Amino acid sequence: MLAETRPRTFIVLSIVFTLFVLFLYGPIFTIITLSFQGPSGGLVFPMRGVSLHWFGELFKQQSIGDIGGGFNRSIILALIVMVLTVIVSFLAGLAFRKRFFGSTLLFYIVVASLIMPSIVVSLGISAMFELFGLPRNLFSAGIGTHLTWTLPFGLLIMFAVFNRFDPSYEEAARDLGASGVDTVRYIVLPIVAPSLIGVALFGFTLSYDELARSSQALGAKNTLPLELLAMQTNATTPVIYALGTVTTGLSFLIIGSALATVLVLRRRQARKGTDAGKGLV
Amino acid sequence: MSVALERTGISEREASTRRHRSMASLAPYLQVLPLLLVFLSFFVVPIAIVVIVSFFDYQTYDILIPDFVFFNYVDVFTANVTWQTYWITFKFCVIVWAITAVLGFTIAYFLAFYIRTLTWQIGLFLLCTIPFWTSNVIRMISWIPLLGRNGVVNSTLMGLGITDQPQEWLLFSEFSVILGFVHLYTLFMIVPIFNSMMRIDKSLIEAAADAGASEWQIIRHVILPLTKPGITIGSIFVITIVMGDFVTVTVLGGGKVASIGKSIATELSYLQFPPAAANAMVLLMIVIMMIVALTRIVDIRKEL
Image (cartoon, rainbow over all chains, first blue to last red; front, side):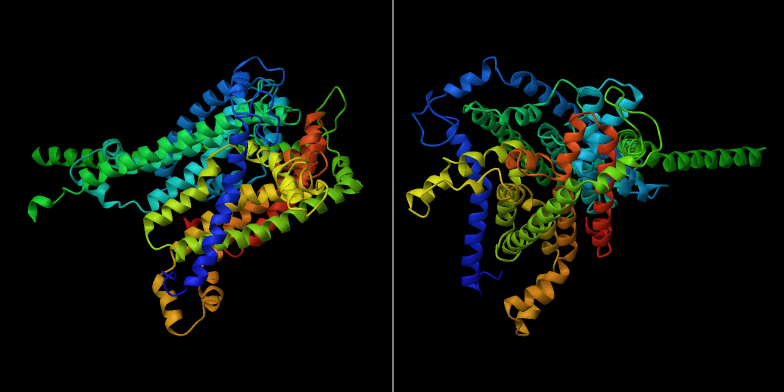
């Protein structure tokens, strides 16, 4: 809206924005390009031919790190964390619409977890498992640490959703005799479904890329980001870039399908939602 | 008889509504229970344990000896290294905060006030946020072929004849760590500031412009005060991330750059829990003081 009246500022700001986007995406496209190095190519330009050599190397047994294992563990953990994040955030979102004893305190605890330095959380969880003599692994400490990171995002999204949620839909359902569970199942859930896809996207990707919180908490078997962190110090070949290309590709795939699902759901809602009251007009 | 029946009928209905009410008032507690359990067992208790362990004693083979000693804290405050590490972490914090705040504000301002249609606003906003959902480590590593000795920047500089030898300060330096922070975390400023800006009633800006305010005056006297909550939230994110970071410093500092988070991580890698916990407590106190100072300005919950 300021664009018409101030064309010069618009141009300057457009340039700043374009440079910022280049700054955001430039490096990642550099390593995507370099991952297609020829077999004799190195970690930097120039490209010595173009090949899929390093992707092939990626799937062979590695001398450094356990890429395949790390990848599998990361995917499994991310899927579990995603499902738990969606369920727990949705239920808690419902709860926070009413006032209940301790709601403010719990809210501040969740926000504190979001902004707590990750290394402190990691330290606390590993010290707790050490102190109680519990086994530290992916499915004990792993899920727990990741949830302390994904749930704040999930809950904040649910807050934003329910702040804009029109309660008259539920009142109408209740007036027509729907039970509480039915109202949630048939009224609330379909309306907030696109946002739950968003929560799932946060749950999966934040867990899949999580590193700082789980760094001390996982025990011997690492996730992919932790393998990567260990690998990058002694990486001498473009294999690490091939791995970067693969995980970035996967991330883009997941973001793309989440956005597509949201669009489809929105469109369905728009189509099915607008016929109400039309017969009367 | 009939009166009696009616009476029981009423009281039964009352009982049922009462039961219903007590169920309804119980519902939020049941719904919030999973969340409560997760944060109790993986956040509240662990943080409490950090507090407790910071007073523990330790030895090489007995890493947690229950005790109530203060030497872990004494060690933190008397080591020269600590002061240097805190100083450098503060420096990162201030520089990164200043850059991300100005950059984030500029980007959000462009998106909120210079892009005409909502579709384009959302599209360009998504373009900025997508990298957030990709791997941070990969995004850090991807600077290495650009900034290294034989990297793109150095070969360009030498190709243009600006320098005749590779610039060593580009990578594995304080510069590359700050660059990495800005690259990864400007988004945490853009999102809340953009959110605040989108709520500003556009007619306020038109009114200011009609009254003859220059663009700079509109920013200074209308937009800046109204986006203060967004700036505050973004600042909290950036400050806490930078204060506690050890990953960016490890990857892009290449072992030459220190930070508080990294010193905690190093202590943990030697299984020195008590000194790590004392170090973490000091870090936490500083971060809490910074946040309290910032939240004096804004109520987070109102901003969602």
